[in-house]
Amino acid sequence: MPYRLIYTDSYVRRARKFLKKQPQIIRQYEKTLELLELNPYHSSLRLHSLRGQLSGLSSVSINKSYRIVLEFVIHDSDIILVDIGSHDHVY
Image 1 (cartoon, rainbow, N blue to C red):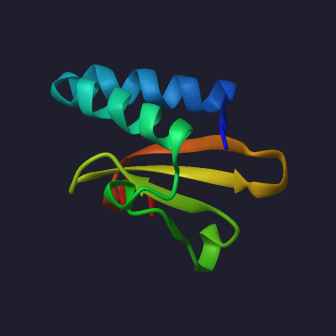
Image 2 (cartoon, one colour):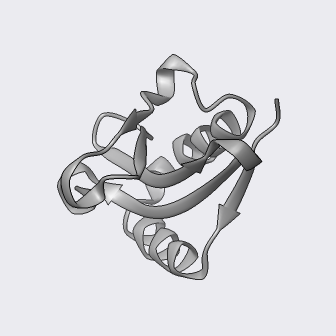
């Protein structure tokens, strides 16, 4: 089942700013998005639901240090990207 990534304007701004500061992970970021679109349940993404103030959102890992927070709308196969950054930043 193919999934569709939805890039909100606020996410695009955050991602540009983040990747400008972290250019060394651009390829990892691109691979994460490709895999997320193909199979968000792939074990290397470490997809998990968030709790507390971020309840209703999920997170995937770019690598051990960086995450993408997203809204995973299963019934439409849409994945809405919300935030990107370090573990401490996004949580």
